[in-house]
Amino acid sequence: MKSFICIMFVFVALMSIFSCTINNDSVLTNSLEYDLSIAEKLYLMSYECIDCEYPNKLGQVLGSDSNLAPPRLLHPAFYGCFDWHSAVHGHWALVTILSRFPNFEHRDDIVNKLTTNITAENIQVEMRFFDDENNKNFERTYGWAWLFKLDEALREWDDPIADSLQRNLAPLTDMLADKMIGFLDLLNHPIRVGEHTNTAFALSFAYDYAQKYNADLAAKIEEKAKAYYINDKEYPIIWEPSGFDFLSPGLQEASLMLKILPEKEFKSWLNRFLPGFENSPQKYLTPVDVTDRSDGKLAHLDGLNFSRAWCFFEMGIALNNTNMMALGIEHFNHSFVKMDSSEYAGSHWLASFANYALIKGSTK
Image (cartoon, rainbow, N blue to C red; front, side):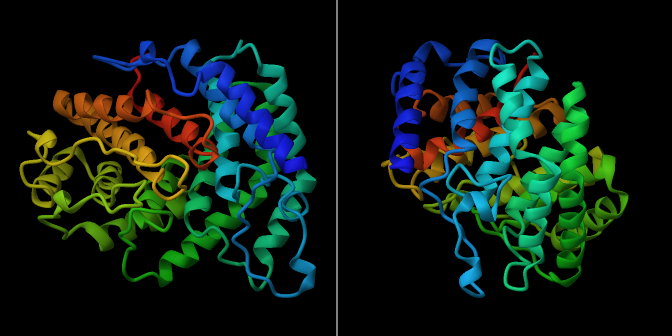
């Protein structure tokens, strides 16, 4: 009954804002402008999701009957949004909205949820889960990367409440940073898929955090990124996407190397990796369609449009490349205008992806 009520509440609330899909008036043309009206449309998906306990995909390994417990007891900080990583980036989305819009109408409600979930006690329970012999690799490395993003956002949110939230979260962040360094020491070959285990995505997100706040992790990422990718050439990007992708393996790799290499060296690497792509990216990639947004795997392709968009924006801004910026906007719009709030298969996570693309590509 609780899960039914939760889902119905989300459905009714979101329908009132989105009217099934985002109104075509929200289409962004020549540039992205992340304004308050868009923030209003995105916040509720994350706000209602982070403590919507069911349905839930735990993804854990059972070592005994003691591991059988409701999500809110196993993961008291991050138990909503269908799975752990979505709950983490749901919290991230809310923090970034408040950081961008300090006088946001729903600020007090969001702060109440953040302070209820991200407590020192709850984080200790989360850490005990990651210490469990059967779950030491839980959410490796996708969820870890989003946890770093959350920590980074809390550190950079200019609000007194952010300091206490970040202090509460820090022990788990440090634990996962150590886990990632240890994992990278063992990982001789990158994972090049378009879903959660993609290595380039995790390294790219983790590097954003680490280059500012964890020198050891940053150095390890720089070392392994070059070892994994520096000699790559003539990547067949026209083979993308695979049917369940929400990440572009090729663009995620390029996004990472953009951060790791000096500009001149990156441009040479990019021309080897994706010959001709810098000048005419539209010849190689176009936005993709979702045939069934009620199917959690098929709905991944909306996320792919958003993640491609943020990679185009990162490279387009760094290289002053208007073709990449335009293609990013095209990808963003293609899924943004079709976001279906009634389909929980996508709505529990897509707001975060759209939010990140907006942050990367917005002019203000």
